Length: 408
Image 1 (cartoon, rainbow, N blue to C red):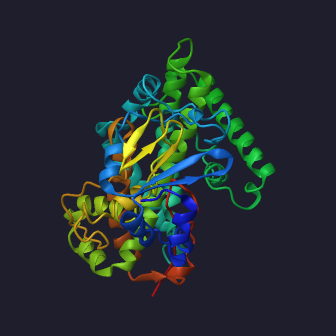
Image 2 (cartoon, helix red, strand yellow; image 1 turned 120 degrees about the vertical axis):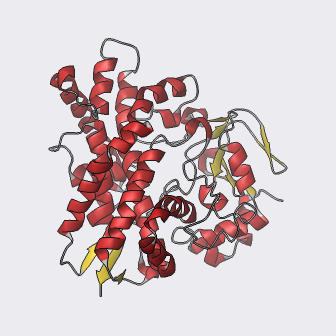
């Protein structure tokens, strides 16, 4: 199979290319059949390989020959300057060290202890929507809920936990409006760096005796002072990473999952009638429209053979999780939403050493949010045509910019 990008794009039906952001699944199906391993030459000479089939994605996602360090690729921009030295962009032994310092905050026992906090926050947000005919699931519920929870885990003071901060974080992965210009991007990065610096300074002056059990950032600051556990850049980068992914992934899970339930009312009714189904239901919603479209950055550190092709050292590898999760070679009737699907070995949280550190938290928030939404919303429908919904055009994440609903 040819890996020529121009030839591949020329052969891809235009309607599939045009709809890749709003509905990537027909495009993924075409790739799995016609070009499961394909390369595209990008600007400045960078080559990006797309891997579409479950078997290949599953094999490579935990393959140590694929490095997570963006500095292996010339001209690759990995995120805000000074905030890239975190566990998602590191290999062992640095990854092992960085993951160890945050792991304890996300062990099952501590995550389960957050259930009353999450439930109270969700109910308060839904109370505000009582009596409203029209509301936005993403902006009025999922966004504030997930951001409030991750801020609680990190110990961000209430005065600093603002919608402006959430907008600033999301602008680092999807610049829009004034954030989208070159000057806007630079300003966003400066403001975020300044915020994180002030937050760390606040934690340092608060004193270790004032650090609560859920105050992960405070614990990290006091553990790192006078030690070599983390560098200053690693500390700031870790705070940025946890604020972003601890919020963004679950935000997309709730938004994408709510839309899927609206579009499959038989499954929504089933979940409402069978509360014990919530565990496998969350897994199926994670699979059906994954909050992570592509796996996070990887580049070949040595030659890697896949599908009859050789990925050269320095080439970027894009593992299409959304495609793997709909592969009929792995899942029976993959385009059907079945909330009782078992087994369900989706790859939405990755696998291996880089398995999503916040997976247990995302699952818990989903298990709380979806039943509450079904219980409290009553009869609702999309307030705009489905084709008018706006999807955030990011490479890694897949999520709605908004999900307007109306009661009827």
